[in-house]
Structures are given as structure tokens and as C-alpha cells.
Image 1 (cartoon, rainbow, N blue to C red):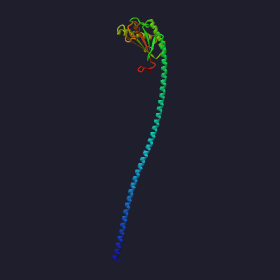
Image 2 (image 1 turned 90 degrees about the vertical axis):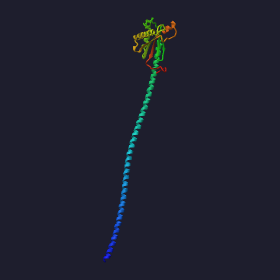
Image 3 (image 1 turned 180 degrees about the vertical axis):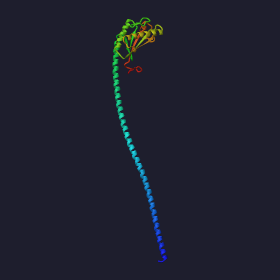
Length: 262
């Protein structure tokens, strides 16, 4: 083979080899490009998987928290129901106790009324007695309970009457006493007020000596300010010269504003 042919063959071979190399390089770049695309998709898939895993873990945590909250809510409802049941039971017991207390008070009031009625009946045998909202009032008029002029000294018949009253009062408990003194219209207001107070004090002192507890007896003098009857006759003035003993029931409270006992 001559040199020219050899060179031609070599050139052809080299061209073919260059084409093969170019094609191989092109294929290599195509494969690399595909690999990069695959790697990108893989990375995206991994990121998506990580995100999904994170979301799943968050959902699991939230679900666990929801379950715990539900348990707490259930416990709270159960406790609330128990408290409500206890409150209802306590209210029922309170209503029962209140009803029993009202019944007991009504029984006590009935017994006390009967006792006061009996006391009034007995007292009326020896002295004029009238019932009031809070108890009763015993009136000792001048014709049966007489003081000498300008005197607060008790006479024997006065002492006898007070002894009988004290005996009846000593048989009962749960009351307070107020002794009120009154005069007629003769004389000055100051003179009569002091005289009525001295006479009320004399009655109080004798009742205390007879056994009445001193702490439950008070006195007050009204002088001529509260006449029992009007008029200036001897009969009217005799009625106005008097001592009253007010018995106030302290075992039962009274509501004087409404006129009802309680």
C-alpha cells in the first residue's frame, strides 16, 4: 500500500473514531443529565417524605394531645356531675332541715302561746291583764294599788299583790319585765315624772326581792304624759294613777313591723 492510501485510510479511521468518541461523549452527557434529573427528583421526594414524616409526627402529637384533653374533659364532666349531685343532695338535706326547724318552731310557738294564755288566765284572777303582740301587760290601778301622797313606799296590800304576781312569774321562763309608772295630771310634769319613776322602781325592787332575776327587769316613769283615760274627775285621775308591768316574751322573736310573730 502506498503512502497516500495509508494516509487516506488513517484519516478515515480517525474520522470514524472521532465520530464514535463524539457520540460516546454526547451519550455520556445525556446520561449525566438524566442522572441529575433523577437526583433532583430523589431530593424532592426525600424532602416531601421528610415533610410528610414531620406532618405525621405532628398529627400523632396533636392526636395524643386531643386524647389527653378528651380524658381531662371527661374527668372534669364526671367531677362536675358528682359536685352537682352532692349539691342537690345538700340542698335536699337543707330543705328537710329547714322544714323540720319550721315545724319545731311552730310547735314551740304553739306551746309558748298556750303557756302565755295560761299565765294570763291565772294573772287575771288577781290583776287586770291584757295580751299584746310581744307578751302581756298587767295594770295595777290606784284603786287596788295605792300609794300615799308624794310617796313611793309600798303598802302591805301592794306587797301582797306583788308577791302573788311574782309567784306566777317565777313558774315561767323566757321573758323580760318592764315596770312603768304613771301619775294623774295634778302637778308639774317634772314632779310627776320623778314620782312615777320612784314608784316603778319600788315595784321593781320588790319583785327582785321576791326572786325575779334583776337583769330582766327595767323601769321607766311616764308621769302624766300617757293617761289611760281622759278627764279631770277623781275617777279618771284614779285610773291614770297606776303602775303597769309589761311582760315581753323573749323565747320567741316578734316582728312588730308586720304584726307577726316569728
